[in-house]
Image 1 (tube, helix red, strand yellow):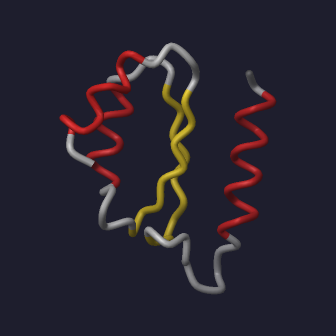
Image 2: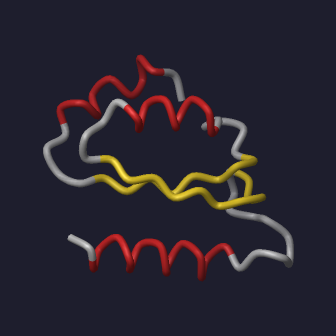
Length: 77
């Protein structure tokens, strides 16, 4: 994700949750992290080993991780 493609996020006035995969080629972790650091209402969850299609092999239950992270975030609002 280029910073220019994320410029509109600064205008969002509600809490945002970004579930980000460490092997996601289209949305690289370091770029996403930079963008989120500049956003006051952004929360970011790192999903280790998963790619853009949410696949991470058998070691990580990606869907369970996503669900748990989303539930924790929603409950903290």
